[in-house]
Image (cartoon, rainbow, N blue to C red):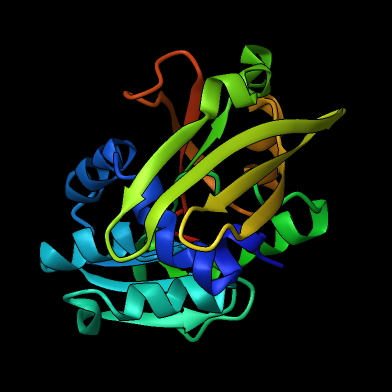
Length: 245
């Protein structure tokens, strides 16, 4: 199930204004070009920012997400008709022959259940043509990113056109092994409404992810750094082998 910040209509509508810097997507755009991708599956597409950037470049895109409110935002954007939007996840997709499947941002880490993660990897692989690639990022556990998820480090007030001021901040709730739970709080100045969204992310070690990918029939071509977060994230590039069935 998607987190409240993605599935609540009021929060989904302000998601992009509250996170306007999407420079983290630039490496994915470059990889789509590097791999000559003409058909891309965007898993966890959210409000459609990455899918629409690809579509603007003439790429055929399928965006899938479990949060209907986020997809409603995506469908309302200019150029949305160029993308095929699917409400769901990677475990039940129509037949595709994608060159590239992506999970940007927190999409991979947000799949915390081990069985759901295996099914996601398997579902993505089945949509790829032989030689097609799966690319996703995950934070390096040793860097302990959650230690900076405090009100002091994250508090902002954003003036959202048509909405008014929105206060937002994060606070850490729990760290239990590889699982980290935190809460975002949102206060809407227009009417004083306070909404919260709890999220849990799984922090996976590099060796763990490589073994999981191999177990689902991928070849791991590369593990890169995220240019916008050097030394803080792994970016996995896995391939469905040419002789795969």
